[in-house]
Image (cartoon, rainbow, N blue to C red; front, side, top):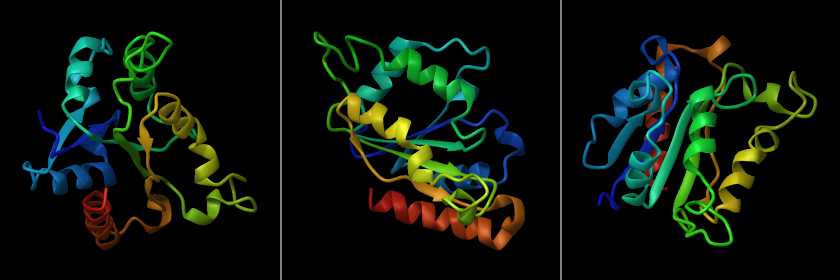
Length: 179
């Protein structure tokens, strides 16, 4: 059991060419005593998820972060598939379910392509990130997990300087320390 560590479930379809998520993982790897990184695209390059293995992995952690780039106003497709296949009736929820993630702390760590102002009622996308992330909050509340506010890094498109990206990795570690 890794209950003292945080499980970071990474879902990025092109991690090798990532700027932010790759940097965050590089920082997390410096602290293997604190974080376990589970890269879904590396684990399942053919898209066939081993549900039993995922259940066993989740059983060993009380704190879980889903890290991914936000595109098309959602998570990458393999993470959506993971949610559909792993959070199943009888395991994650249901009248006969065990609610295996009950009271486990769960949060999202998201990188975006534009500034925070774009995610405002008067901004480019007309919705806040809290509104856009509501399906995740509802999902994790439904399975009785302890859903926490997301860590969101805004603005790769126009402000993706090396210094700013390095600073985001430090802020991410600070966020995880308080998680």
